Image (cartoon, rainbow, N blue to C red; front, side, top):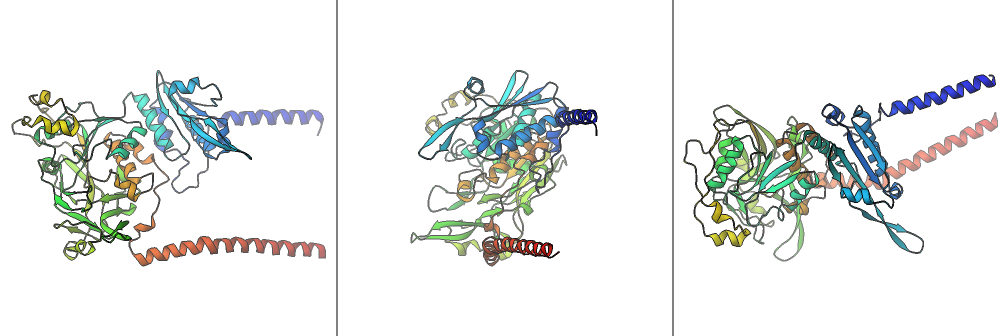
Length: 550
């Protein structure tokens, strides 16, 4: 080969390499061998370019020091580059190290974190950033701190769609029970929704519900919501509003050690939900597939027991054909009531089961003494009511009005101090005489989700689950589905939930599986690795002796 030919080949190789680098910015391929395709963009993310009219700019502010901490920064960068490569030029990604110039990151409200630097003699701290800013026209969304892929695709895709469509991710909530306030008792749900980009409006019972509000959560209220308040909710549904009802028929006094239950006195909420198409049964579901909980008995001894009133709903108990539960990873339910369909005869409403109990569930219908040591009382009625029960369901269609053909309710006079002492509702004397607006002439299509449990989003999830909580994931996905974001429901936490050994109901099987796992990890796997190494060593030695012999 002549010198000229060598020069030509070198130049052509450099040109080919340059072209490949340019093409790699447009065409992206990555082999993903994970079962849940955790490192592959979902179809909705890959097709975002069809919704984007102008350029979307994604800036990943990453302190260079974080590259030495772990693989997360590289994984996040790869995911962002895939967004860019799949967008056909509509998404532009830049990765910036803020360094000492933090004016730009502070303008967007990014939160720094302290990183500990451990030296030989002393430990010091550095201020680091790992946040993402998404810009479209003159609007922007911020992910203040990002250091894993767990929910990143969901967070990015949902925010891009919100910016491009101009439709804010907002919702309302009514939490009317005095001891179960929204920001306190349901604080984990509130935080999850806000972190997902939702603007949450807390509404008082009877307060006007904005017609433009996409989604409403009603967290209990069988005894608190009067006809005036229910009229507001019913009218919201008639206007096309979508509602999640978290309701049950049995009230358990969680705030005392007695854990005594009683039936709610229904002022109309449960009857209205039944009129829409789902009836809440006057009983409590017990299940063999229940949670194992620690408790102190009357002698103050700490014990572990399986507690049938707390249900461990597993993946196989969900309706995989419904968008909301297509990637269901299980939930825990506390003192849940069974649901049955009572669809309107008009035929304008359809219903689907979301998830059920196991087929080894039964009903408790009275004497709700629910202390964990009262195990004998839990089995009453088991033989006559054993079966599978609906725990959550969804309705779609045009719903009849609960107030059709009746006089529009007016707020009943109440003692003002009663409300003022509870929640300082000093506006009550103004709304007491307010006339309710009329119902629309024709109802619009809507969606409703009913969960037979008022405590599913409460603080009990801290007691039975490790974060991230599948209960919180389900409620967030319910907000997305109700808000008509069907296609992004399934992309949050695509790694799936963690399987838990306490959901194996047979004690012998559970102990056997734990024993097998321990033996496999401590003994079998190390022995296999050692055996493989010894085999390779023997073969290599034999080959070397054979070569010397030749």
